[in-house]
Length: 63
Image 1 (cartoon, one colour):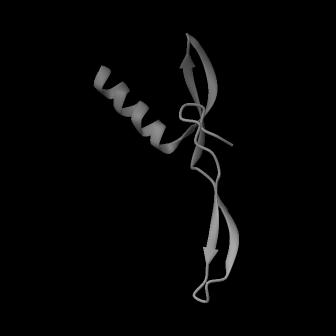
Image 2 (tube, helix red, strand yellow):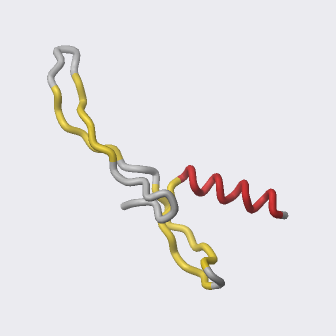
Image 3 (tube, helix red, strand yellow):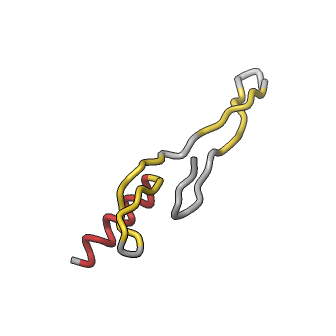
């Protein structure tokens, strides 16, 4: 999954143990499915938590 606003996706890396052995790992972004109004239509969008917080702050400042 990815964020529809900022295009944030899964990240890949290594777990490194004390003995320096590397094993692959992947970390997922914190994605939420929300209903938002886009171009006057209610749609379901996948949005990460950072973008959700930003949208909430922009909505509060607009009021």
